[in-house]
Length: 508
View: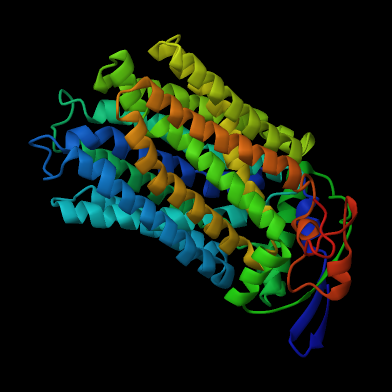
């Protein structure tokens, strides 16, 4: 590594990104997946548990003076609002303070808020801590996706990112089954079971927090922020561990990049970069997030009401059906993830969106004809969500890897907030009206809206998706702090890559 002085700060020429990307998969990478990825299980647990305990919380003797509508309405909206605001607030700090500091802080916020929710004895207390729980989870999306993509080698980045984001549905399965046990008054009193579910979430968060202590700061972030010596120590330590595990030397890294180090980037620069220099990619990110948000609301928001209204499924049994479709959701990213690194991003993103949309159109047609039972409708949903979950997870992967390093966390936060607000605020308002009428035609319309938006997003991906598979992050989007030479031609182990702003040199 060589350094020189420049008027705007130190200039560093380094091969650290190439060294990280040429690493083979190792036990060290599994520690990253476990330490950072398991938080989505908590998110899935939280969302599912609250939906399933709404009826119990509203019953006399629950220990909380609250109605079912307040749980699924006000409390759910506050959780969503907290997640959106948290994403934007913590996302900016993640780019300024670093990935590690923020993924520790945001998990601590989640842990504390969930623990306090478990001892809530008044409605306003429950509302306040549902907001703070969302506030912590929202920050996790920006900090975790940034760190994962910057630490995982390029050839594995797609499948790992999809698998981790898809693990939300493992939490959903756990939440469904846990709520069945916790709400059984033969096992726990009515005012205890629901509290234990939140307490368990806090305990799991504490375990993850302890594991995360061993996850390092992103060397890429350190490099840009003037801490290149620390970045060098971290990467050297990783290389030593991997070599010791494999009992052979690592291949020589290929490619360097020259960085003009800076402490921070202004909001104006971030906005201009994302919405002007990379406007096609911004349109792509917006389309992917809105499409998946509305498809999921078309299916999952009123799924319990659909089962009970049209198929006379007892309210207490809907958790079993949800557990089944949650398994389908997790299997999509798990089984299709590798193809995003081999077949490629453009083909896989567009095809998963289009397939899930077309399958939902087919489900709507069968539902309208009265050809489905509760079991076959659930099977159709599983097929739709198998592809939709992989597509939805790829939305997070896309906005994480197609914008420059200095804007990464804020970009994730912005598009996450847009998608979450659309799906968690306008989506429920629209779909609750449609699925709540008890009319087949209205429910079919809800399915068709979700399907149409998903297909539209798939067409946008077919036109605008970036071929990012197996490419260095610096090759996909040149850092704003890169020198003119590096910005014009970033050389990676895959060969020369052209990666600057779309208006001048980006490839799609």
